[in-house]
Image (cartoon, rainbow, N blue to C red; front, side, top):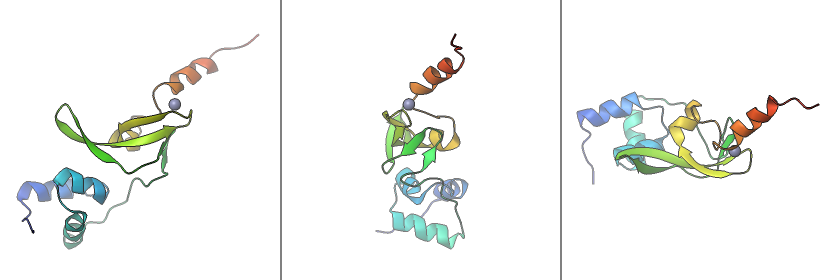
Length: 119
Ligand SMILES: [Zn+2]
């Protein structure tokens, strides 16, 4: 069933068009096809910021992102494997933007060690 796009949805799509289609589909509650055809008709071109296997600092994306509610706000989360081997769930936008760089447990430890001089 075709649902007409309203003003705020179009606004959201245009403003966030650089997000992957899969994310836009979740956030706008529309099918992937609907997102694709609307983006195309609006002439929106995106630079995809992630793919399975993409590495952001110490984190590697290992599965397709999914939506989750954080304090009643819908966010996109994903599962990453950290360089230290830990498997963690993080907010995708925080990781792709560099705000979240690791699992959160190992980096501080290693940074701490680098200041320690032996002897
Ligand atoms: Zn780690």
